[in-house]
Length: 126
Image (tube, rainbow, N blue to C red):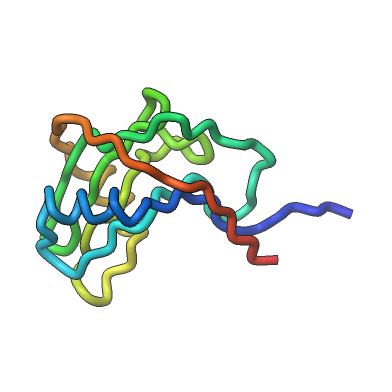
């Protein structure tokens, strides 16, 4: 029997870090800025080292804003090779997953690094 866990691994921003990002980047749309997704769907048994999480970039579109994140020096998510990010704000009705599309289609702008505090959290769906 295969016991593959299905769920969400994420890094939840501390209240202070979220407030700092919302202050530094006043949201153009409805604020989000809650977490960094590490894995969605089948979950690996890997534990991610989150000793250093830093916001290093920004991009906006006509429907959302996204902040690019580095974790221990890399902005690439191990689970799917997409860009680590925080969905900062969205127009109503736009799902946060659309941040992946914006980052694939548009170049993000580097910013002065902002260290953020996060707490790892896993939500199991099965």
